[in-house]
Image (cartoon, chains in turn yellow, brown, cyan):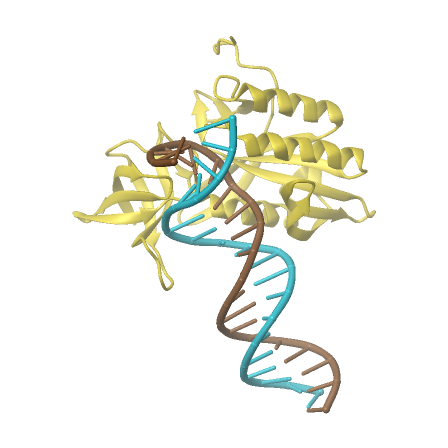
Length: 232
DNA sequence: CTTAATTATTGACCCGGCAT
DNA sequence: ATGCCGGGTCAATAATTAAG
């Protein structure tokens, strides 16, 4: 159901007005979402089923530019998995998902794949909710973890794996994805370095409509900062 | 009685913000 | 600069039940 965003409290909790009543909602996406979650914004929430829930609702998406932007980041790995299985991700056709949340190096990577030829690939999935005009930017907040994931992927490539970063872009107006130099220059550099090491960045759109979420078509990833962005 | 399948429990992790 | 907090999910492990 649709509601009106009131405010966020901490990372996980938000207050949302639905049918004239203010209710609490869980926000899974821990990013800033500052330009999305503004007072009065239209949001999509669902009942929060299960025992010992501390919020009444669960926030699924928020409306921006007349399109739903998925903020339920718990879905990203599942969406990626399904997209890979169905052959939507062209670069990964013929790969099957072997394991999820794979321990590697100092942390975890989202997916371990294996191609028909026996090639193993590690994939880190990243959800992208920020865009300026037609350019999707990642991340929307500085992310040490993101940098570490990229370093681990680069290491995986040295160890003989294929390495992928799969950005799932939740903005319908986006036509390309770039690292967000202004918010996290370190991530941008790490992405370039990972790319040089052989890690392949991919970006695909994720579309929510009529109660369904799907990974759809790819958009190009560009490693240089957009022209309008000033680099210090 | 052994093995498989289902269910319950545990622990790690997500990551920005606030307190120390 | 470091550590903990928060609500929830998922993989892995443990415990229970069902099937052979």
